[in-house]
Every structure is written in C-alpha cells, then in structure tokens.
Length: 464
Length: 101
Image 1 (cartoon, chains in turn red, orange):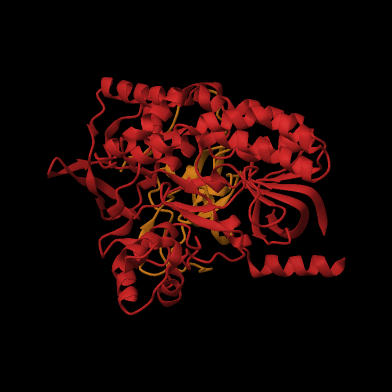
Image 2: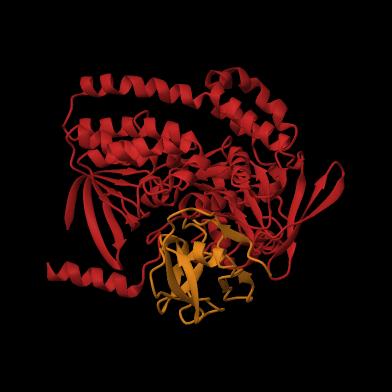
C-alpha cells in the first residue's frame, strides 16, 4: 500500500495553501483533488481560463492564480481527477482514479473538501431549469456558459449578488433578484456591524454590486417569502409573496442560493467530533487553533470545518501546513509559531465580517424547518416533508430512524441534499435540540464505487 | 423552444463532436458533459427511477447526483465531473435505465 507523510484532500484555497506550506517546509505531501485542475470551486478553471472571461469574474477570482502558481512551484505532488471514497481513523484512504480503486496510508491527513451550497427544499426545486447559483457560477467560470433568455436569482447570501453582477457584465438579462432574507435580519445583524467594519472591504463590495445592479434597472424584490417554481416539464415561472401579495415572474431559469455549508461527509465519516452550529446552521468539525480534529493525525481546514470564505481558508491552510511540518518533525515549535504569526492575525481580521454576514443572510427559520407537506425533501428517493412528518408521528425520533423507515437519504447523493433540512425538520417537529438528534450517520463508501472497482482493489491487494 | 443557456462569444474556442441520443452535436472542448447538455438546449438529462419526473443538472459540483446519464455505455455517470471527448456517446437516462442505483 502506498504511503505518504501527508495527504491533503481537496484542491481549493485551503488545500493548496496547506500543501504548498507543508511541502516548502520539507514534508513529503500528496494533494488529491476531484477536479481536473487546481483551484477548487472558488477558483475553478483558474489555470486555463480565457482572459476575457477572467476579467468578467473580477480581481478576487484572479487571486487564485497566485495560489496555484505557488503550489505548482512547490514539491507537493498533485493527483487530480481522483475521488476519495473512504477515510478512517487509522488514516487509510480509499481513492478512485481512472476507474481504478486503490488504498493509501498517510502519517497525517488534512481534509480540505470545502463548501457546498445549503440545499433548501421549496416547491418546484426539482424542476429542470432550477439550479443553484453556484452551478451558474461554475458554468460561467469553467465553460463560459450563461443564461440565454433571462434568469431569476433568488435566495439569500453574498453569492447571489456576485453572480447577478457577473451576469450583468456578461450581458445576461436578469429578470429579477429575489431576496428571501427576512427583513428583521437587519436588526439582528446590526450589533455585529462595528466588528464587521474592521473588514469593511467586503461590505463595500456588496454595496457596490447592489448599487450597480439597481442602476442598471434590474428589478429587486426584498423581504420575500414562499418562493416556488412552477412548470410541467421544466420551470416556466416563479411565484412568491412580496408586500403582502403574490407575485409571478415568467422565467426559463431560476438560480437559487441560501448560503454555503461545509461539505462535511468525509470528515463525519471518519468519526471525528462534530457539533451543530446555530449561527451557520450546519454541522461543523470540532477543531483546535491549528485545525486538528478530535482524531489523532486528521485535520479539517477552511470551509470544510466551518464557513469563513476563500481568504480565511487560505490562512487556515497555511497554519495547518505549518502544524503538519512541525508534527512530522520538519520544523520546531518555535519556527512554526513564528511563521504562523502573520497568518493567524490575517485570519482573525478576515473573520471579523462573518458574524454580521451570518446574521444578515440567515435563511428564514421556517424555510428549513417547516416545508409544505408536498415539497420533496429527498430529491433522490422522492420523499416529501409529509412522509417525514408521518414517520415522526409514528414514533421515529431521529434522522437515522427516519432514513431506515422511508429511504430518505439513501439515494445516489447519499443524503447530501436532504441531510441539513431533515435535521432541522425533525428538531422542529419534536421541539428538540438538533444536537440530540444527530445528523445522518455517514459511512464509506462516501462516493459511488462499483462492485467491480472494489473487486479490482481486492485483487491488487492479493497480488502484492 | 430556444436554449436556456448560451456560450459566451470567446475567441479561440475549440470544437469537437459528440453523440447525444444518437444525434451529432458540436460542443466546446474542455467543458463537462453536463455543461455541454445545457448549452445544447437539452432540458432534462434523465427521468427519475421512481416516478419518472424529468431532472436536470442542479449543483454542477458533484454533490447532488441529478446529472446522472449514460456515457459511453456506462449508466449513472456524474456528467458534471466528466469532460467531453471527441466521439463520446451520451444518452439520457430514463427511469431505472440499464443500471439503476
């Protein structure tokens, strides 16, 4: 079985920074990434993007190029187009590359799987033509593909504005920006504003996007509730409640967004400790200031441990890289602490804006906890909120029991799309603390693996 | 019905040909199968195994598994993760298809 000193899983800003830092300090390290080229979702396609498209995406995106150049200049080994389907507490890693499954072992593992968009079920969210805003951005970044006949962007969170702004510059017709953040969020966010002003550049950017979009005449609807997508074979219109009345807007595309949450399936499958974050509304790995998890030799960094954004992820990555170099005997604790000093300061400064953003863009509680009975919660197995409520009424008391009974969360996505919603729905119905109910128990293989691929792995092991 | 998506007019795009449900379609090199499907005006990539509802790519980053299609004879491929290749055979996956998971 191949063995490495350090294996980093994920090639976004956190993983790239960790790998570069560790490798430069003398650690032998391998970075495994699902994507074909480094950058993660935030800097997707950064290495081969045409200049015209890169300009459209703005300077924040282009910063990713420096991260990738530093990584390429380091001695870290890059293994792209590879999925990780298993990681256990002994740091045995199951990978799949070119249809070939294999096992690796590492002295230390850094999980840098990043974020995914928070799945929020609403009526019609499974219709073709309804996508996430992140999907829209990936189409733009990686393929230069944009809406052709207009789009409605709806939900809450900074990405919504950024996508609309980028679309506007690409000449896309934006039929409407529909803001589902509850209006009272402004007041709960206000106490966090003074601290957020310490990272004022984020706020200025947000205001600039908003101002430019309004100036261009893009229709804005704020304080919106009860969003639904309507259509037969694909979406034809969106409907929502605004200023006490129902509003309907015809559109062939809806891009929805309700913030991002850690992609925590890999960290949860290792069994390391996680807790429910009431401010981020998601499961977060419990980590120390160097991002070490509760399991010896496994660290969880950047957005995969809790949402902080690309800049914070980069600093957390460097800190974890230094910590690995120290624990693997390449640098002493004094050198580690000295080199970490600047990143630790920058990390703290960058995170100042988070409590304000989390409060301002917090999704309405009823969106996640009180979906309509006929809304699909589990997209794969087509399980409605009504079926889940029935299961609770019949005496099933946590998401795992409901999963066994209804098959909710047992489809191809393995619960990635319903996990967050079901935790909140069950807690709401039972009047419980989410922590008590746990989330779905995540078990390997956490990525699709065929019996043939698994059998091949066995043969390779026997041959040795 | 006109396509819901279009490719930006960028100089230097390379084009290749793939087969989508037996039709020859020109797509841009480097894009994923899911992106190529959307840009080619195909609205749904599959129907669900249970009720037969049409579905289309949703997250484009490998976490929703809505973009499953048959690629070069293998069903249930996550098409948002697979780059297009010259001559690739892409098929919509209908219901349980040939390899229901």
